Image 1: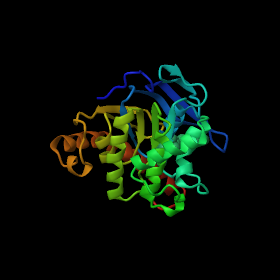
Image 2: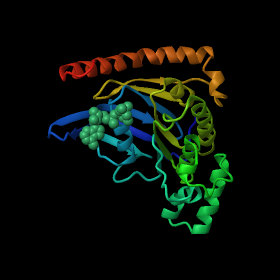
Image 3: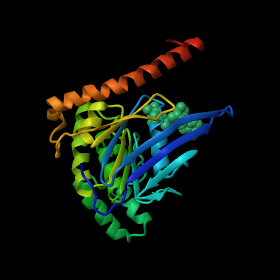
Image 4: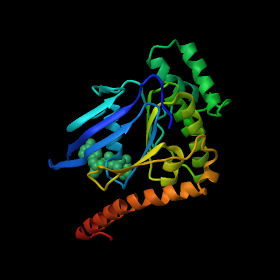
Length: 280
Ligand SMILES: Nc1ncnc2c1ncn2[C@@H]1O[C@H](COP(=O)(O)OP(=O)(O)OP(=O)(O)O)[C@@H](O)[C@H]1O
Ligand SMILES: [Mg+2]
């Protein structure tokens, strides 16, 4: 496991419950009694069935929502307002379509008050780092999905976050691009060592990337189990490590825990759709 030395970015969720009011006025519990700690510089993957509250958990860590009960701390302080030092990468690219790639990446530092020339120079460096030198003047729609994802990573990491929140960031990519992006993410993470909460539906991706994998139960989600991933770092190529003995053992072990929750969610949805007269 890897640990930052400045103590920044650690995430502590203690007995966290979040309830929402639905459009019909009823209360619905999205997550219940979540206990999860991500140490400074640690990479935690979060897996669980659809609707179990993974995205909700990220919004709480980001300070975009408040818990109904329990406490959310980042860098040892209770979250109050938007969490400082946090960067996001979402499933869909959050890039501004009317701005060239360089300007998109420079946005974070510009918002923080960095002079324009310096922000652009730094954005240029980050584009080089993610393999996009020469594409500075392109607009997002002129890039492939994988390239746009690299821009999103550069735009997140240029802010030197102490906490990186990623919500299924690679799920729209094809399998090969996804493997490449996973390798690149690990290289970039090694340089800055932010704490990471990485939501994914792909268990292989979770094991390959993370120091530990948290399995969330069917909704309202709570932490079912946390598995330490004791594969050595650097992890090497995703395409090779996934066939090693330890990787396969971990996959089997975590899948056992996850499968029950996925099946429970599936059977609930199937009953709900039958009651509504829909397809099973
Ligand atoms: N703002 C909100 N208002 C009302 N209900 C909400 C709100 N946000 C989330 N929910 C509900 O909370 C539950 C958990 O949602 P969430 O998006 O966190 O799940 P998830 O685990 O990220 O699912 P997926 O894997 O499909 O992305 C869902 O039932 C959802 O409908
Ligand atoms: Mg989600």
